[in-house]
Length: 343
Image (cartoon, rainbow, N blue to C red; front, side, top):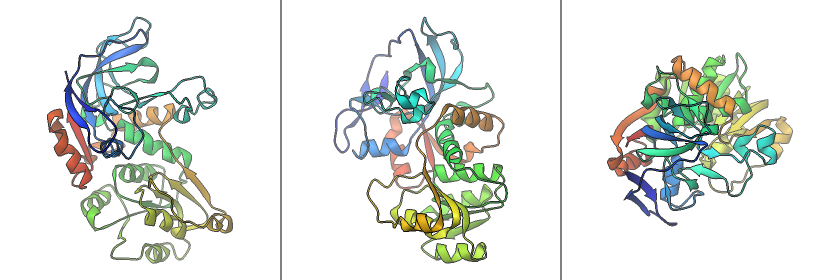
């Protein structure tokens, strides 16, 4: 079978290769991949700017169907539609034992499409049954492939809950920002404000379609002043920073109200200079969000099935796996929100 593999460390080193379909262990599922999304992590691995262990088949946002279940698997059978998180947690470290499997500290843990476990940019993938989730029959594979980023967005709102009536600002209209926008509206936010730059114009239009009450182009307007105007000088109750841009991270502390909440979702990949006095003086709640929990996935699948999360809106292009370079280019140029590859 053809797979898209990161073959070695360094910039590039991504090749279309021939591999035999995996032979599953007794606790695994052999999954035929029906759709797989290109994630920012895949782009970072391409450019050697993220953790990974080569050689590894890329891809971790996926949906597929079980072809074979291992001899010890009792909860899944051939024909089941499935998806899963990427991290194969150890189950025995401190954080796994207390339920935070997303923070598993096993230094040798396997991560689908990233480290020690081949991913979804292939026709077949081996998936441990313990991390898999069954999908309702009514969810199309293409929409189910967005379950992973949807679960990540849900976990951000698990970490930083939104109360009915809150004014919520979302910095960055990428996939995470647009998913969180929908979630905070479902939670009862009274006003939603999305910020971006000129290059985000198409994404900002989609934010409007998804119900954003205000759109701010930070290259044309001062977001701090605009948000103070919208909130009668109070500031936002909750701010989600989803862009990973250092200027936006700094803005978050200027636009949140006193005793407000900030959720840090985007990664900058560098250190930035922020005075912690803002947290002390403002009595702010500041939390990061990383990955997903089991609860995040159950809710993501439910909301997608009920059409409460409009994930189809985020799918800009669907391409055969052979056209992966075009898909990566569309994502990097921001000409697409989410590109799916079909093996």
